[in-house]
Image (cartoon, rainbow, N blue to C red):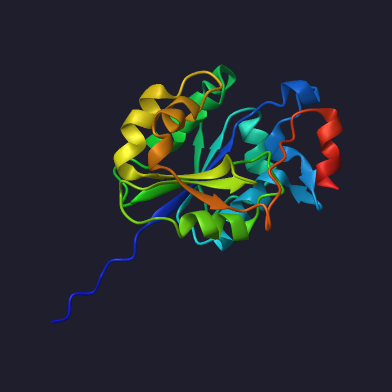
Length: 201
């Protein structure tokens, strides 16, 4: 009997818990983009980019997001500590994958609507093994999305505090990261302030 090789499972992890403090307290997941909540666009980018299952971490106004956004095909985790910063949401997202058959997590932020399925697919295709580390690059600068092979999850979670997320871990493992240039297919701007809302047009 021929041995069929198992296709690696790359789960999408969408961090969508932010309260939009500098946006007057408007939860980022619910900012409107092309007539739908931003969180739906990010979920679609992950799914169309080849990630599955898709895990979504909510926090601010989680109940409202659940009612207004179509997330029925996603695994939704609510981070009760979302106000501590992105690190706690990254920990919650990785924890939601424990015990699953995922080989890697591809992490995307909800407030970067300029990053779509093409960039996700490119970074996903950099997966080689459970020890893979890869990230999108924009003109050579590391950005999102970021792919963490399962071998890294425990250490990434241990260092994910405050608003740091995985920054310190990625800095420490700089030489192991495969950078995937995406500036020709994506724009890496964040929606942080009222002035940034123009990117949603």
